Structure formats: C-alpha cells, structure tokens
Length: 520
Image (tube, rainbow, N blue to C red; front, side, top):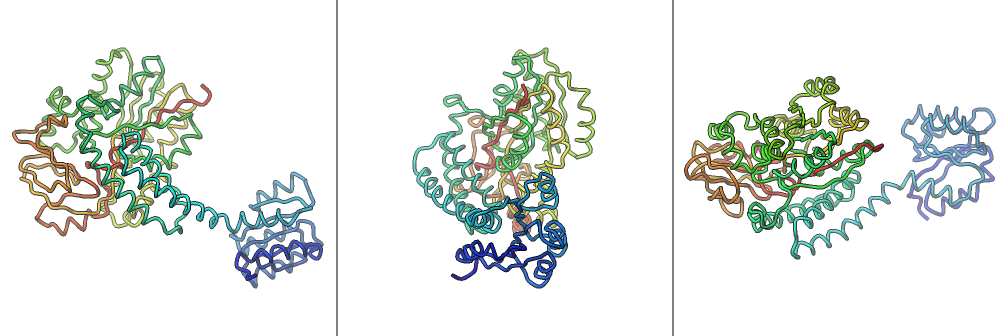
C-alpha cells in the first residue's frame, strides 16, 4: 500500500519489540522511520521532515523529555505522542507543560496507536468530509423547505441552519462548498423578501402579532422588573446573529442563557428600529409623541437617536414601572467603555442598566473608508472573526464577567443586522432625500419593484411622513442604492460593504438572549 497518510518517527530503545505495531501502521498507509535513542532521533528530525513523533520516555542516555525539548527547538510545530511505562503524575504534568499532544501508558496495542495517529494527523480531513456530507444533505432539505409554506419560526430555524454551516466552514475552509452556501443564502433571502412582502403589514396591524422592535423591552425586560429582579439591558448596534453565535460559547461559560429572536422593523436602521426598542412605539407614533424627534428627521440631523433615555423612561412609566430606577449609557469608543466599566459599581444598586454599544456598527462604516480594514474584514467570515476578537478583548466582556457574578439578569440584543451588498441600483430622488444606502425616504423616489419595496403609504408601515407625499424605498436582497451622478464612483466604493436598512434575514432576524447567573 502506498504510504500517503503521514510520515512518523518512532523513538524507542526497544524498537524491535514494536515491529508488529510498525507493520500495522505501514499496512494502514503510514510511513514509519525509527530511532533507538535520543541523539539519533534529533539527527533524524534535523535531516528529514516528519508529521508526527512517537516518543518513549525511558531510554539510555538522553531520556524522552530531553529529546522532546531539543526536537521542539528544531521543529516547534511537530506533534509528539509520549509512550511510557510510567504512571507517575509528575511525568504527566511535565509532558503537558512541554505540550505533548497525547500521553499513552505501555503496553499499547496497534489499534490504540492507530487511533492516536489518526486523531493528530487526520482529524481535519475526517471532519471536513463529515461537514461536506452533512451540508450536502441539509442543502437539499433547505431547498425543499423553500417550496413549502413557511412561518417566521420556520425562517428563524432555516437562518440558524445556514449560520451553523457558515461557522463550520469558518473552521474547515477547504471543503470547497463556501460558494454554494453563499448562493443558497442568496436564494433564501430572495424567498424571505417575498415572505416579508406578503406578511409584514399584517404583523403591524396586529392580525398576526410577532415580536417586533417595539416589543423587546415589554416582552423581555419588563417581566423581570415586575418580579423585582435587576436587569442589564445591552443593545449592540448592528450585531448580526451569525456574529452573536461566535460569541455564544463565551457567554455560555458565564451564564445560563436562552436565545430567542425578534424582528427588526423596516427600515432596518438605527433611527427606526433602535428608537422603537427604547420607546416601545412604532416610528410614526414616536415622531408624533416627540416633536423634537420629528424635527430631527425632517432636518436630517446628524444623530437621530438623541432621545433614547427619554424614550425608555416614558416607556417604563406607561408600563407601570415608574418607581424603577435606571441608568442609560451609550458607548461609542473603547475609552468610554472602560470608564463605564470602572464606574459600574456606582450603578449596581439600580433596577435597570441600559447600555448601547456602537462598535460593530462603527466597524462596518469604517471598513468602507479603510483599505486596511477591507483586507482584515474581506467578507462575512472576516467580519465574524473581527467581532469575536474585539469581544474577547473588550470592556464589554469584562463587564459581562462581572455581571455573571452579580444579581443582575442580562438581556442582550441588537437593533438590526447588516448585509454585504453587491448590486448597485440606480434610483431617482430629489435633493431632500435621506442619504441611506439600503433605504431612503423623501419625495419623488422611484426604483424597480424587483430591487426595492416601494412604500407610497407610510401609515400602512407605521412610518412617519416627513412632509407631503413622503415615500420610502427599502432595498431587497443584496441591493444598494446609487444616484445617476457619479454612479460608477460610488458603485465601486460601496460594493462589498456591509450596510443595513433593507430586507434580508441578516438584517431583520435579530438575536435576543436572556442570561442569568449560573448559581441562582
């Protein structure tokens, strides 16, 4: 049999007694070289390239641990399995400290050795084959499901399936199926757009009531406050569900966590969805109740989320929780997050902490402006990795660790997600039109139905009218809007960027996690 599965160096002063094991490995397709002492093993490692070393501890002259150290100096990444008669714990500890991959006690049988070699040399290949076959099976299941009637829970389940495969392909990039998964997500999003077209206004009318942005506080935060439990409510702006799932293992290590979802209202943009979360009202009612918010919209103010603290205070009063004490904090920069972390003990007596975190959204915006960030965050996988790396080293993770040992419940969510846009579409608009890439409001807006949801009657979508004949365009699929002037310049600038405001699973299906102290 051709030796293709890996090249092994076996070091043992009694190597002749191991011939049956060596022959067994060679019959299985491995190439095995041998040495009977440490010096010969080091020479072999200098002169040849091996995939794995099997090392005895007790040999005349240089013992296994000393040999291991010198081989690791030559080839730091070369994995080593120690095989010894000793069951002394000190030796196990030393082997672990020297980064031995496995520790086997003699006598060993050929199957034990084979299994150890497979684990170290073939795990990735075996797992990739499993991932490939698993996805191809579920690919068909998802395709069949798209031709059946689906409700919003079905879409949430489907979206979770797709995310699980995205995360698997992040770990196993050589499956060659990444492009197929991207195409399937695009197909699903096209069907999801049709689903939203058919159902969204029914949800708003109350005929089929689902958890929308304005229901988040009422459905998740208020029930805990009514039971006199403390809550830290965290909104991470633009956090997608796939990004949240990369953080989930870290959160699960801290809390008992239950993950649900809510649906971002349209447009899936902070001035609409996040204001609705804090006000508990639809955008049209928010603007009507708060003239200063309506004026900010009308004048296209730099910030359209200036009044969230007031919105939250009024919502708590409407829901009968006027006596609850709370602190609201919006965090744009790391130094502000660190300052809040250092001061959080001053707020721990309060019933509610409300924290808005803007990092994820800022990363998406800055990426469009920076060639360095485009290299670091080339696609969804890179975006997930960037968010995970930030979170692992962030003040927010340290805050959550502190909260996990307190009497606070944590409710963590986002206002909306984002999508990587690919197709620039020309739209007609006047000078007073809003500047969004995935949504626009103003007068005399026009686009094709296949590219945008065209809203001519804002009241049907519970959206504010910013003047006579206000209408809205909401992008579908992976579309982004461009004006005829300098079309090609901005087409190249925004293509492949992460935007929000439109209709997609990534933007509308938002994670909602409720986390409790594990010891309570």
